[in-house]
Image (cartoon, rainbow, N blue to C red; front, side):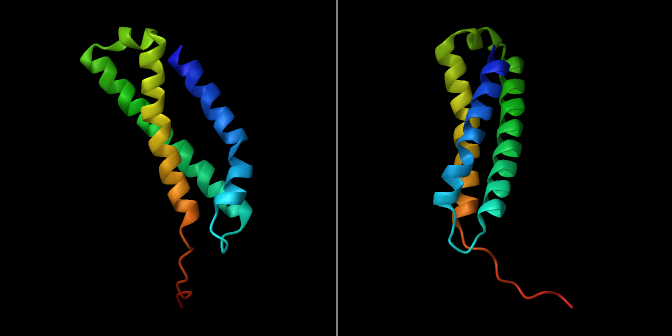
Length: 102
């Protein structure tokens, strides 16, 4: 059940990501680049956190707790909140203006 909820929440968040990214991005970053950066970071971080936290839950023997909707929701918040915050931070910061190497 947690996998299905996670996939549904992930898809809903990505559907609302483009309008959010257009408003939240740094003015010097192009909208498509900001969206792709946001989606990539959000997906990688949330996927990594999901599997890492699921592994911990299974190792500790707490898998039965995820059948409860409140615990499953808490688990998904622990997965998606840090991913969203990191992706948001990356699109809000100014781009690096490094010279092209020769």
